[in-house]
Image (tube, rainbow, N blue to C red):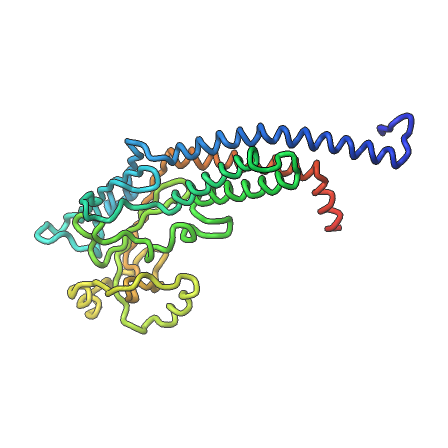
Length: 338
């Protein structure tokens, strides 16, 4: 069955009627988008509240599965880790002096006035900035621009979509769909916590860092061993373009670590982790990762924020598609592609 206008209109008059109908539909859509933007604003504010500092914060257990390698907890307040207490029991990490051989190394995040500031989480700081930018886009769309202009609103929705997608990607653990967690959090050798951020200070051959992946808090601990200068120059050159170099300084292994490595007793057992054989620059020296422990703990607030951002991203995508259809963009793009 076909629909037809009767009596038939001349082509020019029919085209004019179609244009008038499309203009009215576009006017209605632009008006309804203001309601959608207010709904999006409420959702973004809920996400910001989930990441805002609270008095209690979120205390998460950080324990390795099926082993005693790492046990403890971390407390997140807003975009920072403000409290931490962990115990490490690794074959390559000697026990504290004057302690039994089986004793773990106990570390507590320092709260002394002279200690470094609480551990920042770069990914959560990026999410907060993106949420603020998204709210600014909505305010400009509603009050600071021409809300009745379709091209203006299309541009604002495109910018909003980018901000929301980047925020969700940062919570997931990357800056974009084709990028890794290190793109936001930074490589471990560059963002490992300061030695004196913990009590007692971290051993000089230990790198510890915290980041976010899949809305979970991830704690990684690595014990390192020095590499004779130049023996891995080729590997270093190959990886240099990807990783660069870490912070400068003097490599701080003690005489016992150097002697053990020189005598070949630094560990004959092949380490079982994903960085075996790789060489990194750590405090001015070449190192290999001897042991690596990775523990993650799901954060309910981050999970809720990531789910809300996914829903907001879908809503923005639907609004953009509807506006493109009424503006005739999809037909133009198909015509150009054909």
